[in-house]
Structures are given as structure tokens and as C-alpha cells.
Length: 291
Ligand SMILES: [Fe+2]
Ligand SMILES: [Fe+2]
Image (cartoon, rainbow, N blue to C red):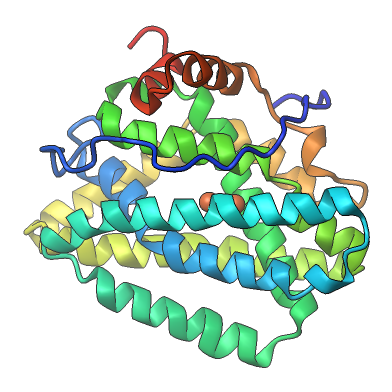
């Protein structure tokens, strides 16, 4: 990942995009591979409640923001995250129809985020959790653009993730700036929250995938095979996570800022195509010129 300062784009909330999510999208929409598909599906189930949590934790400090630019960024961040939640809910309804108890996942997540974290932890800590989670989504968004494997994904689901990725990058510094400039969260708390999110986010994703594989009807031995192959896909040298490790670790540098990192070429291809055509699927396809 580039250490060069990325060019910051304005935060543009986009509404009513058509991803064709009502179409006959295959169950294993990513490379006909259960692990890859369910990995992204599990994240999708976490987004709607997660994004409500992020909005609430940033808005805790809204009245203390004096910088009009940051105030506007918080408003645009809120609108973008609100839209993400709505579109992922539409996608998650597909998963519910497949027999996955998305309703139970949401209920448990609500209990953890709103019934526990927001009830018992300080607003500084939950904002630091939000900034950490936003860093995780931003590095995945940057990595997503650069991964040619996505050529093998269904263009409709990929378009949804491409749009989400573009907007995650546009607002990637908002929670961080509120945390640093307004809430004045110290380095220790920032790092502590990142360590907690780094453990709990993948753990939740894997627990949800575990339930999904059972609903999909895979036997115990088949599931073992899926996990072995899937973990290799994620963690092998040159795997999905390898290109973003440096970007992830940069968060632990005391002088880190989100706009110090990340390539924007593919992001610009998406923006250029979307502005020209207004077509979210064409814009998603433009990220992968060989597709
Ligand atoms: Fe989002
Ligand atoms: Fe976000």
C-alpha cells in the first residue's frame, strides 16, 4: 500500500442506486466459492447495525464540533452510512430467504453494541471503536479495488460492494478526525480500541460463516475443508490480507492519519464511470477492466 498521501475526495452521499439485487443472484456469487461468498455475506449481515452504532458514536460529539467543515463531513458521513445500512438490509433479506437467521444475528449484535458497549463504556471508547472499525473498512475498501479476484464475482453484488467501498474511502477520516480533534482520545485508548476491534470483528465474521455453512448443508468434513482452504486464501503469502497488512499496522503509528495511505486509481475509475453513466453496475465493472 502506498505511503504517498492519497488525494482526498469530497464526501458525496448517493441515493437510490440500482444494483439489481432483486435478480437471480447465485447463492455462491463469488467465484462459485462458498467460503469467499459467505465471508462477504457475513460482513454484510454486520453492516446495518454496525453502521447505526458508528453514526451514534460520532454523533455523541456532534454538539462539540466547532469546525463547520468537520460538521458538514459528519452530516455527509451519517447520510452515507444510513444508505449503506439500507442497501445491505435489502441484500441481507436475500440471505434470510436462504434460511440464514439474519434477524437473530442483528438482535445479538444490537445487544452487544447498544446494550453493552454504549451502555457501559465511555463515549470516548466507543468513538475509538468506531474510528478503528472505519480504518478496517477503509483498508478493505482499498484492498477490494486492487484485487483482480473480484473479476470472478457476480457484477451486481460486486457493484454494491464497490459503491460501499468508494464511500467508505470518501469518509474514512471523519470518525478519526472527531476522535482526535474533538473528543481528544489519547493514543492508548485509540490502540486499545483497535486491538479489541481487530479481534472481535473477524471473530464475529467467522462465527456467522460457521452458521451459514450449516444452513448451506455442508457436512462436518466438507466444512473442515472449506475452513482450511478459506483460511489459506485469506492468510497465505499473497492472500487477500497480505497487501493490506502495512496499511492496517500504520494505525499504530502515533502520527497516523487516514489520508496518508491508500491508492486511488481504481476509485477514480469508479467515480469517472458513475458520473458519466449514472450506472452503479457499470461503475463496479470499471474497477476491473479485464472483466
Ligand atoms: Fe458503510
Ligand atoms: Fe464507514
